[in-house]
Length: 126
Image 1 (cartoon, helix red, strand yellow):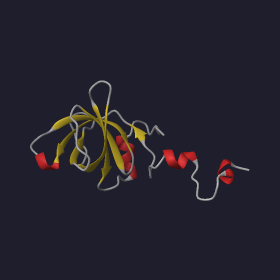
Image 2: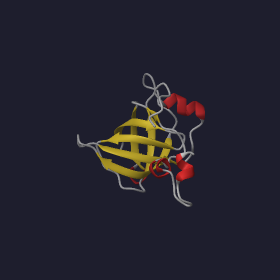
Image 3: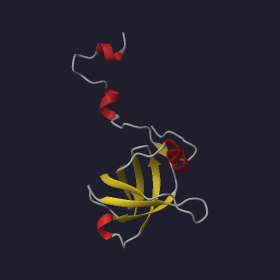
Image 4: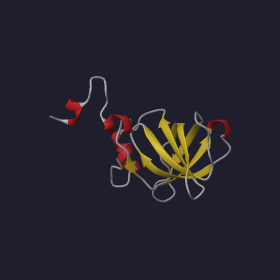
């Protein structure tokens, strides 16, 4: 009998409670820049921590409020930049070093080719 079979009706397995992501996350260490939609003239450096088809995790020196719309530009090899991404801040977590982990839901899901391009060797972080 599996653990799921042992649960009472209506109860959720522990993994259902802990993992709510709709898509796998992949590690990344790409440099990027972002601009809050309300402050388009402000361009801030950020680092991509992880990426999924529906979201992106950023490390930033600046804290952003939940609900903030960010325009994101990930740097490619050399001086090239990827297409503009638009994300909505869904969580912000202070880091021990003073940085902020900023989780964004992407307004438009990434195609698999774009996801592979942003991920570092497609290493799943989950």
